[in-house]
Amino acid sequence: MRGTDNPSMHLIIAFASVLSAAGRQSLQTLALPNLASLVARLAPQALDAGDEYSLTPPHEREHARALGLEGADGALPWAAHCAAAHGIDTGDLAWGRITPVHWRVGASEISLVDPAQLALAEDESRALLEALHPLFESEGFVLRYGTPLAWYAAHESLDGLRSASLDRVIGRRIDPWLAPLENARRVRRLQNEVQMLLHEHPVNEAREARGLPAVNSFWLSGCGVNQPVRSGAEVHLERALRAPALGEDWAAWVEAWQALDRGLLAEALQGLRRGEPLSLSLCGERHAQRFETRTTPWLTRLGQRWGRAPALQPLLEPL
Image (cartoon, rainbow, N blue to C red; front, side, top):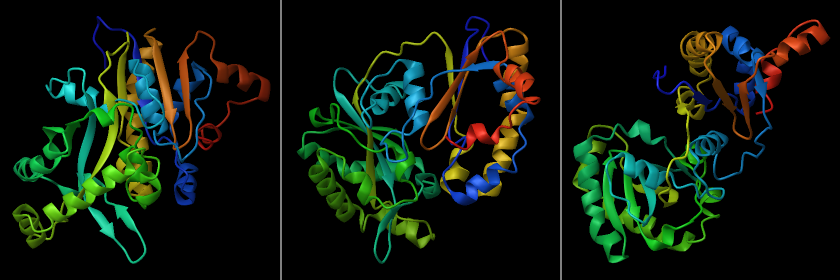
């Protein structure tokens, strides 16, 4: 789980709780003995409180805090951070992540499909990005390829630009999440022009012939200038619950939770019993609750007071 030269671990679990009524009902069926044992041995810290309308979801706030990254809501510099990890020289430029997406157009709304469902191959992604170079470069942007679902753009207008995380927008109407953008007009214009450029692109024609969704727009997020990582811990953001939560597949969400409890959380518990320090952040759609290593188990003391340890559901539900 960690190297011998770095004994401290910060484990962040995204979508540990959800707001959906069906999801909350599924939460009541969860049996997570290793998670219960972990939180019984850790001390709760101050709640990172927010709401479901924040541009940055709780797990991204916790991840940034763990790495020492700073920025306003919707303006954490994830694009520059990830671009640098992909070997791109970010310099002192402000970067944004451009995610190729499919917008599903309904009778009264436009929603964003999970980009993972595109199954976009590298050659397809590179060909589509190449088609966008003249448009973005004419606006003064620098474009770089990262992965099939992560392109990067640099421009002075992206410094501190607030934008919604993809994890806020997937499966939802896009309009409310575009409104907070200070440069919404510029971004919407670029999105409209990209739609026209890609409408009859050979890559999309071939994809549609195979029954795959076309790449018909992009989402901009994570804007800002790269910052140095300031963390002495090994930070792990666990995303196993993300896809089933965003897809509202609650049977799969429960199964993923149970797999985490049997695997990663069981391993973390073993490390804690060996005296290895641990931070654990449980993140829902509004709040994040962090726990830190402490000698005296807080839930044990509560259990002594009340006769038994509290169940996990009351801890997870409010998140």
